[in-house]
Image (cartoon, rainbow, N blue to C red):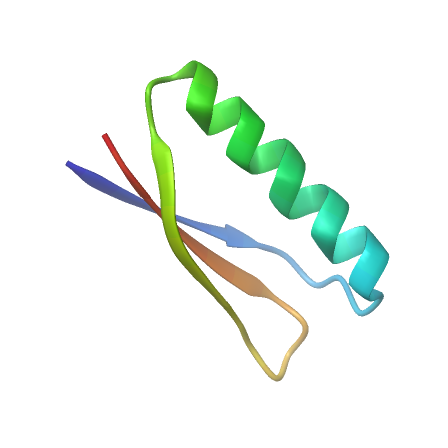
Length: 51
């Protein structure tokens, strides 16, 4: 099972990294593993998790 999560607008790299790490740790507690991620030109990130 896959789940996709969008990290909202975060123009600073450090803030984006912290948000991605927090979401990855949160999803790990639910049994999901981060498979891949990409960032958009609009300073958002798309994370794909697998259970």
